[in-house]
Length: 231
Image 1 (cartoon, rainbow, N blue to C red):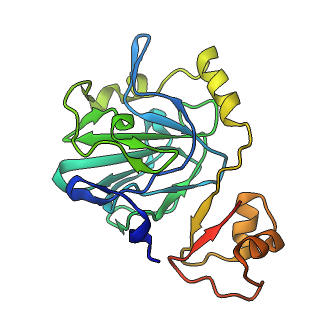
Image 2: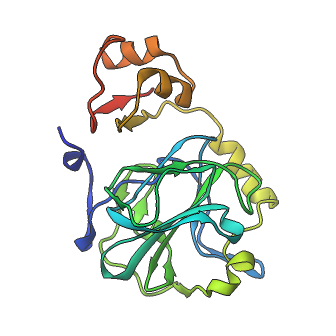
C-alpha cells in the first residue's frame, strides 16, 4: 500500500497529510488585542513535523515570534507555515512531497511550551484551517476554502499579532490535557537515513518494541515510504 492510498485529497492541491497528528491547544482567532492567525498543535520536542501538501520551500529560517519557521508554497498562491521548530530539515528551493518531514517540533520563538504553529494562507490571507482539516484524525472536513473569518496578515505585524499568549490559564489547561497519554496509534513514514535505532530514540521506545509491533527483526531493511507503527 502506497502513501497516497491512505491520504485524503483537498481540492486541486492533491493529497493532505496532517503536519502532526495531535491535540489542538490554541485555535485561530482573536487573543485579546492580538489575532492568532494559525492553529497550534501540541507535540513533544523532536517530533516529526510533516508537509501538509506537496510544495516548494520559500522560507526556512528564524523569523520573529515564529522562531524556526518553514514556509511551503503550493498551487493557487496557497502557503502553509510550520513554526516554533527546534530544527529545520529543508532548504529554500527544495520541492517537498506531501507527508515528508520539514523539521522537528520545538518551542523556539514566542512559545512557552513545545507545539507546532500551523498556518494556511491564500495570497497572504490567513484562514481558519480547523474548518478545513481534522488534524488529530487526518481528515479533510471541507473542500471549499471559506471566505468568512479570514484575515490579511501584515508582514510587519507578525511579531506581535500572529503568536498567542501562552500564559493564559485556559491554554495551560489544554496543554495539560494534551500531555495525557492515549492509546492512539502513531505511524511513521520511513525516510532516507531512518534506522530502528534513530526511530526508537526519537519516539522514546526500544528497538525490540518496534520490531515486535511491526513483526520485523533488527536486520530488516526499512524501505523509504514504508509505514512503521510506533505504538
